[in-house]
Length: 457
Ligand code: UD1
Ligand code: CA
Image 1 (tube, helix red, strand yellow):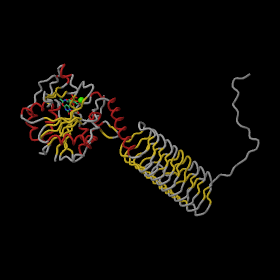
Image 2 (cartoon, protein in one colour):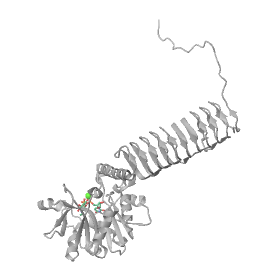
Image 3 (cartoon, helix red, strand yellow):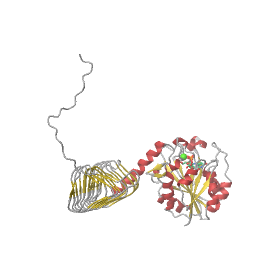
Image 4 (cartoon, helix red, strand yellow):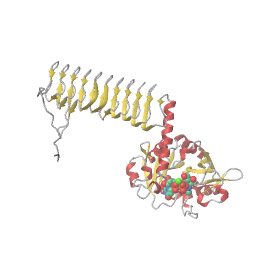
């Protein structure tokens, strides 16, 4: 069935105390409204229209997407008035679904259930709450059919005892919508044009009103403050952790893991506490991630272990590697299998072939390293001359002594050895030893400098 979706996002979000429009605040690394758009997209609508408000130009810019329509609502005269602004952008699809841009956890199947309940009538997504304060109440008649939705501010004491509430998500017959919205008035406590008043207009026209009750109320929670945003982030992360556990991933603590993107795991992956995964991260079979690691757009092949406190970005890590602790893998790094990158080693835009190791305190930038190379502690590629970056090439089976500087562009041929403490500025021939070490001097009986006596008799 073809479908319109209207996403209401014109509210000011005053309680965020922010320069940023509320719906652009992020949950799991993505703007709130992007979550709602993704849920709406899953229903394959013919049109999605976002209603934005004053100061919301940023929303429009941030969500640049040719498939989205935008309607500006200024001033904001209520939810009914907001939907009215979207009318010109809608297609003649039979159903129009209204959702809020600040309700990021809504699930596609819940939206679909509501759309399915619509056929010709109005369908309202409701919830049963122990404490319904603040919400519009679902008023049902003697036959249990919905008669009206009454806002908290307009509610009588009797209404306030009703525990079934309007979540705000509604599906409506598009062909009737314009007429109903045009007939709304603002004769209520808030002097707003309430979308919820459509219920009465529908009943007057002999159109029935159906309710679909949401199973998991957290799905319909909105964000009005930073505290609520933090709370929903935890709900989202918990969902994510549970789905990983269900798929057979071991998590040391499902409450101490943050996924801000998509994390794809093979079999028998283990993730220790306080890890953050951003963008697209893929972990192969048997990968182990130690505590306090951050991986951003990284693929890690089977059998690799990432030791604690490592940061990896935009990189591809091969099989059976050992990275960290305290390793920094920067964008453009590709490691083949069995590579070891140890503590305080930084690797940037480099290719390292199988079996090579840089175990301690090194900087490898813009470098190609062959197989079975040993990079000694304190080795640095001097890849930057202040204006340009240059490449270092280290061929197979090279041994680089500790504290070596490789001044790029420079090539070290296969099997060469570099003595510790060397500064290499020219090509090193295959199977040779290169060293630039200053001879050791010895001054016997050397007296160390002493502190001068000050003001002593
Ligand atoms: C609304 C419902 C209420 C429901 C509650 C659920 C109405 C009249 N009331 O109340 O029944 O229980 O949501 O949270 O619909 N918005 C606009 N333009 C406006 C006003 C609102 O775009 O002029 C947007 C807001 O950005 C927000 C959403 O509509 O995303 C809901 O607005 P809000 O003011 O929070 O509605 P409530 O008073 O909470
Ligand atoms: Ca609200």
